[in-house]
Image 1 (tube, helix red, strand yellow):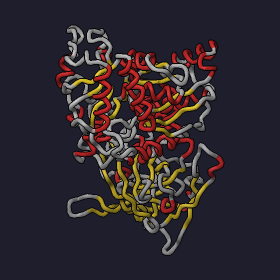
Image 2: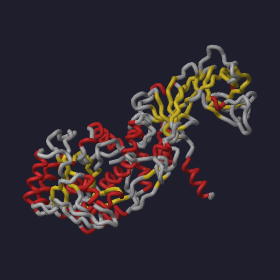
Image 3: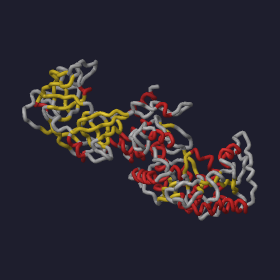
Image 4: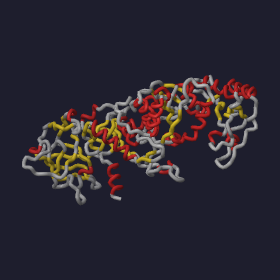
Length: 560
């Protein structure tokens, strides 16, 4: 169960249904769900919604939720994906009641298929996939019966057993349900239940060469596990009639589960198609499935998104029956809110500019006290080394300042955070006229950032002592896609791939960051939240900036 309490979760239409089922005594007041990914890729933010919903329902109703792998397509599945999905679910804060596989039920599914054949409800078809697809017709075009539809039960049984025994080539025959080729629901026009595929299966090896389709394996796996509420995304609503047909024509070990559909998660500037995400990985547009720019759970974890904030976001957007798109800035606002509470503050300079304090006593060392987290009194303080040579941000000095520029410039005094007041007096430039060093004086009476005479400054800037600075590589991220709705209309999503989605800088950090734990997120003061890479803590990823873009979006909407 997640650390978050779900007792205040709003009542949505799925919970209303479960409440009604419990009031009627259906399923004996038992609630069991499942999360059933196919292990052909890593999970993304859309899957996170389904995970939070299915495991959240089990938590809410003192039920159980299984993690079940729909491993029915051996040519696309891999053990690395299995292991990664288990890790991702647990990272999100959920522990499966059981980790199970559709392949656990292959023998039972096969026996049930034979029972359909015996009752004339399934037949073996010799036609290829293209012909079968053409014969299905369309929404305004009737389907055509297969010429093999009227085979006898004995003939179909012999052929089906021959399919299992390896008597036929891949694609030579399939098993189809015998329903209605003129049904208004295209899914009911004699769907394929089994196909021949001589591929090595990640768990069963070469024991099976016929594999059930999703529609044949899904509902029956629910029934075998005694799932009560089978929660699917909205694109499976047309499959529900077939889900019910299959279960109604079998002898089940428990009451028939019911499928309920909810709207999938869509985010701006994001794609969640596994096929398209795989294309990004394979063509080198990103560094892998766990690239921090990817909307995968692994990518979000590497970028520093807290699992608690993802769960809170999912609770906030709720569950609906209608598809909609949420602003990615809303998700980021939840990330920022959580990190603001839990992240230590540290100083880092991303684009260093040398500051030399000309009146600093030679050989003097100093330690300045800085607050670790103003939102958490228990976080305490730390000591930060201070010296006569510092690094500041290039943007915090201007030789020719624009209007309303209040940071450091010649003749102006500013405050160094937790340090002293300094005044810029002179600069050193390179052959191209670029400022490479700023010479300043400091006021020793302003230790801690307060002037005894009460004088004020208009800007406070951060800094790092050059003598003790830690070098680090920092990745700064922008949107992976420039289009807010990549792939909408006739556009191809990858056509709006942002070539400037990542900028890498060599930064200077305060020494406390040398001991940071891999994966830990801290606030670089004035800059944003940054996560130490989970494999190399000398590399940092910007998680989110400090500015609440979601709040600004809402203000703009209110102002018309």
